[in-house]
Length: 128
Image (cartoon, rainbow, N blue to C red):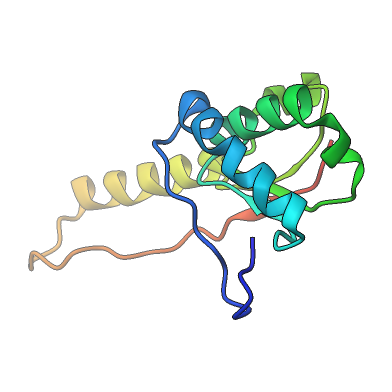
């Protein structure tokens, strides 16, 4: 959500379904007041917790086209009664690259103890 200053408003909770459920009433208040222009969560399961409460307790608020985004792109998203986009960290590509680096370093070890820093860019997985 964005506050009146235009900066994102962060509502902190424990990650996971229960954490999301615990802040859903606060999110609903933000939606009611018009100060919420979208919901993003630290992971899909936390967002699912928020949405579970919003759709069961505040279904009238969820008639809007509020942008929703999670993180992890869990494969069971298409089984849910609501849809949301998610950031896919591409674990298959990440693990494949980590294995390549490991094998390379086992075959020809680095002479220094420099840390390897590499980014495997994530991808946006649209709503199913």
